[in-house]
Image 1: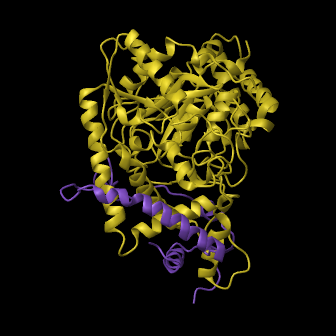
Image 2: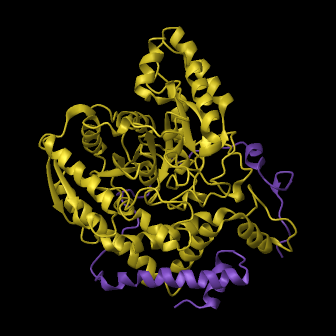
Image 3: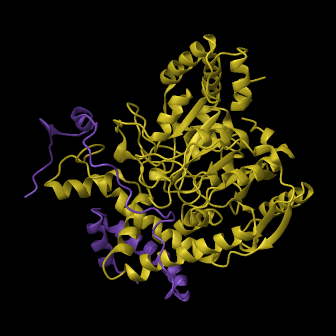
Length: 93
Length: 485
């Protein structure tokens, strides 16, 4: 059972601001969805390894060599507010 | 013959024989689009100038006698969750309403190299989360077969555009069925390749272990051509498999004599619409008449697919969508007190309700105290689901099932209850969990609406899956049907 304060905690983690009706709605819907997932508890998975990824790929790296990368102006082009070469944001502390 | 009704392979013949020009072809597609787009609304951003520029280059090459790729000059649409350099890319979300990518997705670059003409970016459920395109942050797309019904989702725009003749081929993405289900709802062919077969570089990520880009076309050959053009290893995608470009058209016409086809009982049970089941049973008989051996089989963990998928996908999504914070690109909320307030307001104002729901769900199942019971459990059940497919595909060459439990539903029919919408992907989502390739092609009609047949193949054995699809398609005429728009 998820409580409304669980929902508030999760919303904070996900950096989402919810209106009061949204909190009630999500509490209800998340409880329905998670209730439906109880079905998984029936299955014995003690001896089963988790599959995070279906391909047998590991540690796919490239050579540690400086190459050609996105020009600075392209990177900054979409930003809502800038100061020279910096992305500008409201105060942090 | 109206050019917008022809397939890419038919059009290629006309182009190289100089019976039509690429510019003419694209202009015909634009004319068709102008006639139907205000009803269908498949596109978020048309890119006609870019398409014509490419068409002119292709015409010049053909005039000079140079060889051109089978897709050269062919009008292609791209789902708006794939980055196109210099062209607005939104993922159908207000949070990216003004985002202009500084780079293109690898699949887009490969299409450009082939000379295909990008005609526009198509509509989708926001961040690819949905099964009807009703979750688009901008507007819904309508099914060309019945404008009161959804085109499916999340690649609804791409499927509808191909069905309506607003492009010849299109790219979509599929995380739990988002190519196959809209293909089935719109009566076109749609392929989700093996996980890792097509680069995800430049695809706006939803669930990284499930997402795959794939192709839409009006027939299997077109889909195979498009898939061939975009597949193969990409050093820019660390999850892309190590093999070169494939030619998926090579063995298309080899037939199905002796092919062993399994039909999982769980996919033909209650919960599947009667008319849909009958259409698939008809396809089973058709395959037998073509010389295949068709038997029922079982994928015992099928009933756990939906909860497993809806634990893993939102968890991965909650992580992937953490980057949308208003700092470097996209929407930034005005009038905020500090940076955390900016994050909260930007995301709350920029994301739609389904996206927020999935971020909430995903964050919850990954959070301390719940990770083991939910997320880790789901990863273990994923192993069991994958093993079901591995076992079945040792015995059978391909598996057959309906693509979706129903034909296209009406707008608003499933938006009241999120779980109802999720059921639409019942037959498709296990395929993503297992990473095997799957596709949908038309196999009949119920109340005038197309029914999709799903074919599932072994890992990296798209060739057999496509061969099975082609044999069925060529022995019927469903692929020649066109909506009466």
